[in-house]
Image (tube, rainbow over the protein chains, first blue to last red):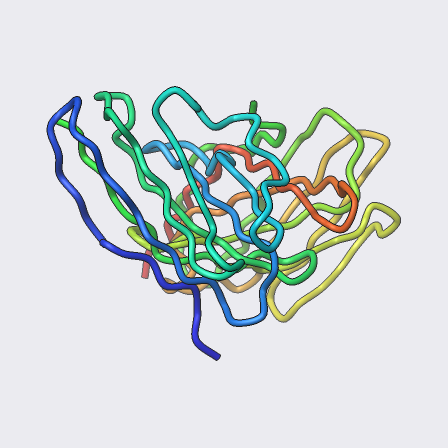
Length: 111
Length: 113
């Protein structure tokens, strides 16, 4: 069974630029999550999708972050404009029940 | 906010020794899960314990849960160098058909050969 795929693996941008991350979940998993993990911290949930609907986006900074999940499969997370404090690893996870399966993440550096 | 808080923040042991990590949380939960993260990688699920369970085993892993104290512990027996990683507890709350996980800051375990 293929795992959760994320791209790119690394991204370096300057502040005020925009960036997008892509995630392809495990086939058949209806629930998809985006997390932000700052160095030395645990993952923090940004947004949770059930199929292509948003279940929880209470911690998503909506003035600069946006996410969509087209056709209930792939998802993209966008930051526009980026700030220095957005430097982190962005993790995508998917699940069909209680357990979440994570991708390797995108490491974002904002200079 | 992060609900789970792991203790210690870092742990260094010799191969063959046991490693114990603790997790405390603040609110009611449906279940508690432990995940492992190798450097530069995503998280991998290790074990889940339901709120009505007190102890669970999986291979060299033993998890306990005390809901009255809102705490859990993860024991790794006979540790190996390959166990070197960060370990996170995550509390799970169910909302409808979905589960939301809230992660702690993690314990960095180093197993020296």
